[in-house]
Image (cartoon, helix red, strand yellow):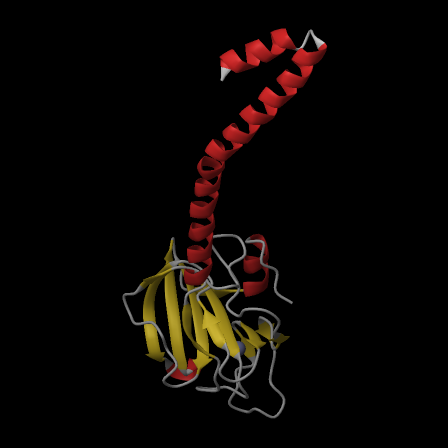
Amino acid sequence: MGAPVAATAALANTRIGRKIAIGVLLFVALVGGMLLTPLIAIPFAVAGEQVTQEVETRAAPVANGEWGYPLAGGYTKGRGFGYNPVIGCSYCSTNHKGYDMAQGCGSTIYAAGPGRVITAGSLSGWGNTVRIDHGGGLVTLYGHMDWGSLRVGVGDDITAGTPIGAEGNTGRSFGCHLHYEVFQHGTSIDPQPFMATLGLPLK
Ligand SMILES: [Zn+2]
């Protein structure tokens, strides 16, 4: 394309030359545009397809690429971490080890982080439960899920945002909710500051 550009530059010194130059430039731009359009459009089309696929495999709550919320969208906050007896529930724990959040019975619960499923089934007071080992001594637990709702099994390697089951009222529970618990080296830690450090503040 160097030769036509040089020629038009030389012709541009005359009046007729300028008209020819404009014509040639328009022609070059038109042909160039026709040739370049597919080259530019194809990578965008490919990139768009990849983004779509990622959205389909990863559920909405993933916020920072690695970790996300265990429930998608808005939720009602239940009991936080610590001393928190439930009025009218004698069998509920008083020293609450997790963070309760609710969207309603049957709402989808998602893995908060990537890891391997180490529990998928009934687990003492937590009822129908999934536990995920994230490595480095970090484990998350999702309790009180609906019977028959589990979508993962022990040994599954999953990513954040993988649907694992549905909100239920199994175990020592007082109404449908998700009991979300985080363990560090076997000890329950407060999920609120833990999630906040990941850029995922809870209510
Ligand atoms: Zn709880």
